[in-house]
Image 1 (cartoon, helix red, strand yellow):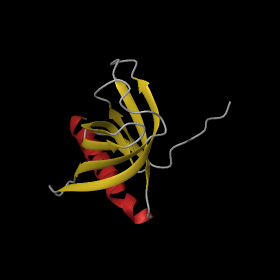
Image 2 (cartoon, rainbow, N blue to C red; image 1 turned 90 degrees about the vertical axis):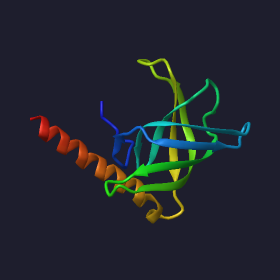
Image 3 (cartoon, rainbow, N blue to C red; image 1 turned 135 degrees about the horizontal axis):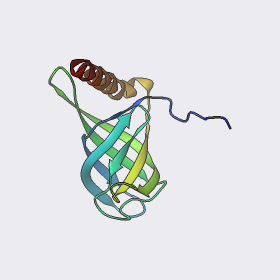
Length: 128
């Protein structure tokens, strides 16, 4: 067996506020929290069962709290890749893949992930 790496960007665990707008198959708008985020996409908690379907296009507004103390509000286009029930919490989750018009549009998310990784490592060093 060979292991296949599917992600091109690191994902970090983060509970961030996110607003989702999906127009297909039925118009849906809701706010929720992320479970993790990375340069390629995010995993979100769904408030209701069957609220999103796989393959649906979404627009997401995400709040990124940066280490400088400022909040970055970014708008991202994406596609729902997978909808599933988390086996530990029994809650509905959805994986969203982001689509960027330019590589430069990905930079705020990658910068947030980098800062979050540094913060996590600093905290682990304090505990040792």
